[in-house]
Image (cartoon, rainbow, N blue to C red; front, side, top):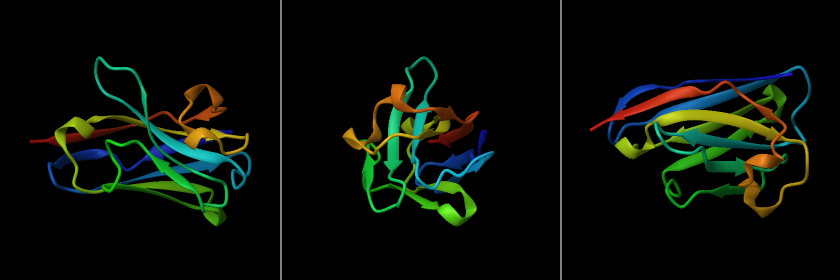
Length: 125
C-alpha cells in the first residue's frame, strides 16, 4: 500500500501549483483523503480533506478560498490545486488516507492510516 505525492516545486508568490497523490496497493475510493503540510521548524498541520464520495470537503482557514481539494476515484488519485500562493505556504506537503468515516472535517492526524512521502513546495517572495 503506497501513497505517492508529487507536483511540488518552486513558484513565485501569487502563482499556482497542483499537487497529486496517487494511491496504489488497494482501492481508496471509500477513504477520507487529506493534505497536511509541515514548514521548517513547525509542526505538521492540516490543509484540506475530502470525503470518499468527494461531496464533502473541509479547509484550514489559512488556505480557504485559495486551495481546492478534489479526487478522481477511477484513478485512485487526489489533487490539491493551490492558487494565489504565499511565502507562508512553503512546506513539505503530505497526503494521507483514513479508512474510517468522515468526521470533524478530517483534521485529526491520528486518524490517518496511510501517509505519502511528501513533496516540497517553495514559494518565493
